Image (cartoon, rainbow, N blue to C red; front, side, top):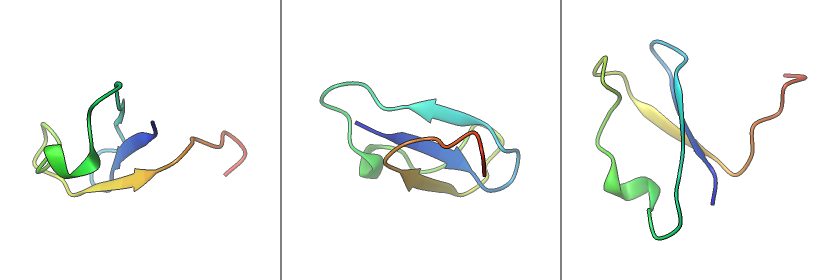
Length: 43
């Protein structure tokens, strides 16, 4: 499914089944969201 990560605040949201990155315009802080297929804690 994947994750949306906010470029402004660093928050993230795990996409649920049936959701697409295109369904979300921006973060609650109004920052731009970027899609990642998985989160990597080592980055």
